[in-house]
Length: 349
Ligand code: 1VU
Ligand code: MG
Image (tube, rainbow, N blue to C red; front, top):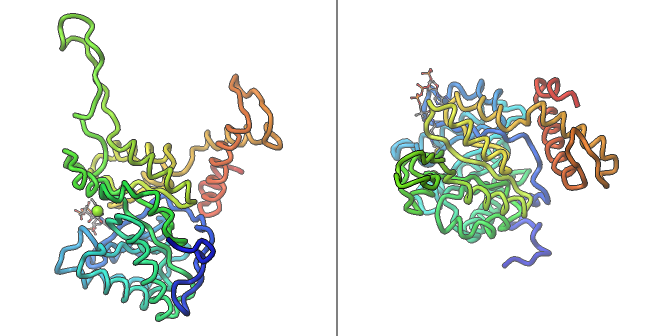
């Protein structure tokens, strides 16, 4: 365990000091692209203007023979593109792979000042974060990187899930955690072959009303991911880092994608992955509070004055606790409005 007094000291001579807080930046969607795919890469400068985070993916979904091209492609794109205030992330290969050491060495020393966050897949415990933490410090020093790189872990193994609290607390570099439902389902031996979303077989059924066990028994599909997302959100919130829902693989089912994203939003996630351009606007819509919610939150906060006591608004009791809920909504709305002129107008804060 680390000396708590040394938690914010750099882990290598010459590395920048870690941040004491994760800076809040709009993070409604992490848009994945394959830097070795010329067609996709050509769209990056335009897509970067529409998204909060753009991520060059080097891990799963990149063919083995394209791993090096993807790494070099990301270096070239990062050097040639002005991302404005859009964050640039990378998902490196897993820590047991033959590529990750070169991924980290190349990216930090070549484009360390352009990158904001390194997404690390298949994190299983604090030891994985400690390894990356020290290595990044050494590489930041070597590459003369001025601002510390942050780390985002993907929660996608049963062991990682078991250790989610220690992962969230492992380093001041920890920026957040994403749920990776496909790898996690495989690791848990869940019997779904879908990438995120529900399953029609996971349901509860009404009791029978008579002798006939099939008559009038409505079934209700249940949420396969409720426990996992809720536990991840608690681990993140308890450590002041940000939780995200990950991928929704049925690209053409934009309705179910919106539902999955909204469940995550309501449970506390700040964003989700977009795998295809069609998912960008879904994430933007879902992870931006509605005008009605913002107007209600404003009304409650104004009526509550210093935030103490109880008031009645439209037949409902509001008090210190619900005022705090409304402040969560208003803080997010204000932060998003700062970056998005459409939301600024919509919210009129
Ligand atoms: O119209 P054009 O031909 O010029 O362009 C296509 C396509 O190249 C482009 N496009 C994208 N551009 C930027 N970013 C993207 N993520 C992206 N995806 C597609 O849009 C135009 C229309 O594309 P399409 O509808 O014909 O779709 P495709 O068949 O070309 O591609 C679909 C997939 C799903 C293969 C593609 O979107 C993709 O590879 N997305 C990223 C997948 C990924 O990153 N997977 C890893 C994360 S999920 C995980 O790890 C666990 C499951
Ligand atoms: Mg995965």
